[in-house]
Structures are given as structure tokens and as C-alpha cells.
Amino acid sequence: MSQKFLSLTFSFWAYCSGLLLKSREEEVCILYEKINMQEMLCRNGDIEMQAMDEKISFLKMKVAEKKRQIEFLFKALPTKKALDADLVVLQIQYSQCKDRIKQMEAILADPTNESRKRDLGGTDPSPPELRKKIEQVISELQKKIKDRTQKMMALVAELSMKQALAIKLQQEMRDKEQFLMTVSARIDQGLPPPKETEIEWLKILRNEKQAAEEEQAAVPGCVHTTAEQRPTAYIPNDEYSLPLPRPYGALAPFKPSEPGSNMRHFRKPIVKPIEI
Image (cartoon, rainbow, N blue to C red; front, top):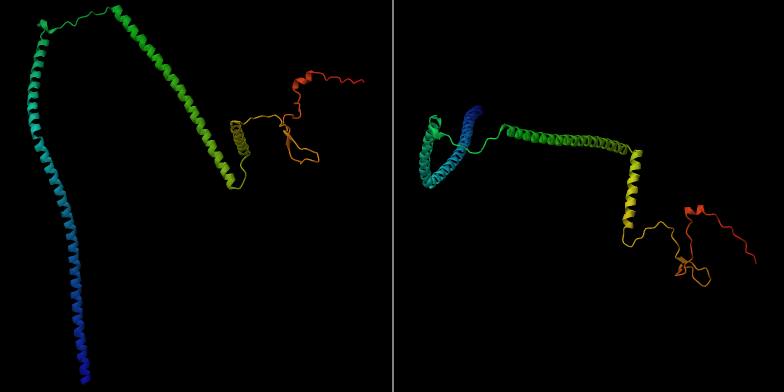
């Protein structure tokens, strides 16, 4: 009986503890919600504070700008007063000029006033002189028009030549690009380049070799000749000398040159026997 009572007591206290724990969990949830709300309010407050700080900085800048403008206007105040005085004087002069213009217009519009006209002086050209001057002007203008037309035609011809050259160069560029693509494709496929390319390459190599030879021949002290090279030394064949080249010196052997083409006009001499 006592054991049953103890188990009931334990169950009752466990139930009470569960209810108390549940209520505390609800309170904790409410507190967390309040904390989250307070944090959100703090963040919003920080954002508003930052916005207010920016606004305060902007207003301070505006105040400083207004102060600078006020100081500038105070400094320019004496100049403004002088300019206002000049403006008043100019307005008075302007009104006086307007009155003077109206007065002059009234004088010029009066046909009975003899003093309104003014003699300019000089003489008027006669009609033949005017016609002659007009013809001269027309002739000069026609000459200028002719010159301009010739220049324009020359420019048009030059432009046509330039356009033809541009078209030719563009076509040549397209041909070169197509040729380069063809050669690249053949090289990628492991094929030899076209025959024209090989001929052109050999021509370039020949030109480079010829240029190198010409450059070498242009060196000071170098003599370029196409004559057959003559020996300047001999190898002795006696038994008392070493077989080493020995220069001839001043008594080099005579070596006649090949007969020229004009020798065909001469008959060969008849060798007569020597009689003893």
C-alpha cells in the first residue's frame, strides 16, 4: 500500500514537474520572441541612426556651403554696389539714346526738311561702264567655275584610281588569306605545300643568297672576279725537298687566256716545216 502511495506521489510530482516545465518552455519561447523583436528593433534603430547621421552630415555640408556663399556675397557686396551704380548710369544713357533715335527718325521722316539728306560724293558709273564691269565679273566667275570643275574632275579621277587600287588590294588580301588557309590546312594534314609556294620559297632563298653575296662583295678590300683562279705555288717533286707548296715568286708560269669569239675571223696559220 505504501509502495503504491509512493508511486502515485512520484507520478503526481512528475506530472506537476511536466506542467511546470511546459509552462517554463512557453515562457522561454515568449522571451526568445521578445529578444528577437528587441534585436530587430535594435537593427532598425541602428539603420535609422545611420540614416540620421548621413542626413546630419549632408545638412552640415549644406550649411557649410551656404556659409561659404554668404561670405562670398559679403565680399562681393562693394563690387555689387559699384556695378549697381554703373547700371543706373547705363540705363540713363540707354534711355537718352532711345530718345535721340526717335528724334533722328522724326527728322528723317519729315519730307519738308532739307537737311535730312547727306551727299555721299563721288560719281555714278555710266551704263556702258556698268555693263563692262558686269562682263568682267561674269568672266572671272566663269574662269573660277572652270578651274573648280577641272580640279573636281582631277579629284574624281584620282579617287577612282584610289578606289580601284583599294579594290585590287582587298582582292589580293583575300587571295593571300585563302592561300594561307590552304597552306595551313595542308601542313595540318601533313601534306607538302603547293608547288607555287615551293617555287616562291626557292626564289626568296636565292634572292637572300644573292643579297648576302653582294653584301660580302661590298666589303672594302674584297675583289670580285669571275676569272679562273691561277696557281700561285707549286709542289716540288725532287727527292731532296718536302712535298709542301712553294710559291712561284716573280717567275710564275705563263697561262694564256682562252681565245675570244673574234678569233673565228682569222685563219689558222700554216706551220711550215723547219729545214736544216
